[in-house]
Amino acid sequence: MSTRFNLGPPPSLAYAAASIDRAAHRRNEGAALEAGAEAYALVGEAVVLKKIGAAMDPLFALSDARALGAAGESVFLGVRNGVATYGVSIEAAAVEPLKATGRYFVIDLRSIAVQGLVDGGHLAALAQAKALLAWHVRHRFCANCGAPTVMIDAGWRRDCPSCQAQHFPRTDPVAIMLATDGDRCLLGRQARFGTGMWSCLAGFIEPGETIEDAVRRETFEEAGIRCGNVRYFASQPWPFPMSLMIGCHAQALTFDITVDKTELEDARWFAREEAAAMLSRQHAQGLSTPPPIAIAHHIIRAWVEGASIAG
Image 1 (cartoon, rainbow, N blue to C red):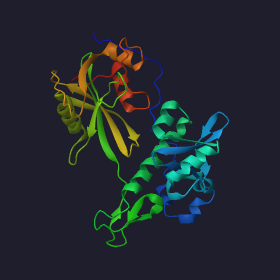
Image 2 (cartoon, one colour):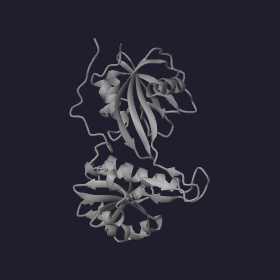
Image 3 (cartoon, rainbow, N blue to C red):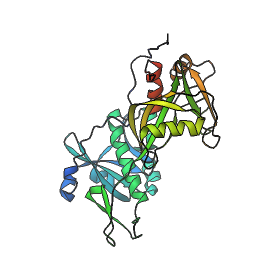
Image 4 (spheres, one colour):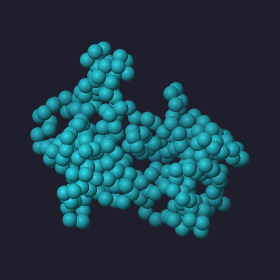
C-alpha cells in the first residue's frame, strides 16, 4: 500500500492569486483613466519598494512612480480596490540615486517573493506588470516590416504605422511535470541549481503540440522515460520573462533513465519518503526541492500527499 504524508497547511502559490480586475473594456480611456491612479515601479528585472518603517510598500501614486526617474512605458494593469493600477518602467540610471536617499529598496521580483518582502496580494500584479513591460522592450519594431511600433490600448497592443500590423502581448507556455511510478518520482537537476536542489522536468510547449504531448516529449528527451497518462495539476504565471507554467503529473511507463546532458546535470528516481524530506528541508544529505514560490514545489507536494496518476 502506498505511503501518504501530511506536510501541514499548504503554502500559497506565488504570482497566481490575482487581486486585480483587468478591466479590458477601459483600456482605451486614455488620460481620464490616469486620474487618481496608482502604480508599481519597475526597473528592468527589479521593483522599487518604499520603506515604511520595517515594512515595504510597492505601490505609488502614478505621478510619484513616474517621478522616480526617467519613466518609459506605463501599462494599465486593471482596477485594484476600485483604483486604476499601472506598471511603470523606470530607467536603470535611477536605481543608485533612489538607493542613496535611504527611502527606497530596489530588488528583483523573485527575491521579493522568496523573502516575503511585500504582501502576497501584490505578487500577481507585479508579475503582470513585469511580463507586460518585458514584452514591450522586446517588441519595439514590427515583425512584419521592421518599422518602429507604437503602444496602443494602455499597453495591450503595439501597432505598426507603416504596414498597419497589430501586435499583441505574448505568453510562452511551459509544461512542467512530475513523472511517477508508484511510490517514486522522477526529478532532475540542472547545473545552475543551488547545491542539493532537485526539481520537476520542464520545457516549452512547441507549435501544434498539446500539453499532454509536450509532457511526454520533454520527459523522454531529457530523461529517456516514456509516459502514458498525463493529468493537469495547476498553472502559474512565471514572469521571467513572460511564461506560463502548466503543471502536470504523468504516469511513467518505462524506468531506465538516460540523461540528456545538454539539458540536465542529472536525473534520478526518488522515493516518496525522500521527496517529503526534501520538501520539508529535512533530507539527511541536504537535498531539497524548489521553494514554495515555484509551482514545482506544489506539484511534488501534491504527489507526496497522495496525488495519483495511475490508470
